[in-house]
Length: 317
Ligand SMILES: COC[C@H](NCc1c(COP(=O)(O)O)cnc(C)c1O)C(=O)O
Image: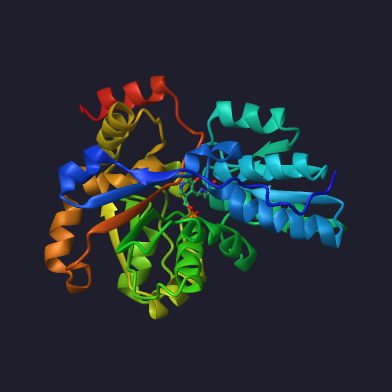
């Protein structure tokens, strides 16, 4: 029945010998792929679902590119709450089946997350239905901030991926809760899903015309306003990586670390494998003395070995 125990697990945090050797840095990995539902999402989504169920709700409604939905379906089952999840057509059939297996009702609507989200908001107008967003809510950021609180010591930098910006807001909230306000965050997007990079350059939110990247889990056409707020108060550097480098990194990471991750996750360590980090450290004064780097291996279920091999052929890596 109802539990107010956190629904997420503490995850392993250890050095990567191969990435440390390659970059000359002290690279540590936070394995959020080991969470129930397969990604970091359960931290924020679980926290928010618990609050909603505690307050009383007839049905949870979640929109997602896939992984937030997986976390919401898992949380709903643990909290014995009914849930309907709206996902875009870019969500893999495997994920749709997995969502149904968790007991969720699933609606596949729209070509990108934004359209599935519009349908979810419409559906939530029914009495007693409560909307759980995938990235834009302070309760999510509060839940995600627990990632940083589990680190054994202060890192010199944190690297994380950005889709809608919920993970980034949670990471910054965690760093500030630990008094590590001077620890810069490298926010990584794939080219074609780079709404945060665009917003930082413009100084206001920018809506991409579409998502032109294989990293569909980063496929929010507009990041949440909260990312621009945190960028005003915390050292954040944004960068992009190509789909090609991301696929190459998925493959190398699988060989080196024996962990299969989706493009949204691999983007975070693609900057290490392709040497971008070393260039950035020469260009950006705030990264000059960085030695210990904490990379959030955010996980995600939208990947199979077959899909990776198909992408390796497609991108010739
Ligand atoms: C469209 O999708 C948004 C969200 N995925 C977000 C996501 C991110 C980025 O997290 P965010 O910046 O959205 O909080 C990173 N890594 C993985 C594996 C993810 O699934 C979702 O599942 O609904």
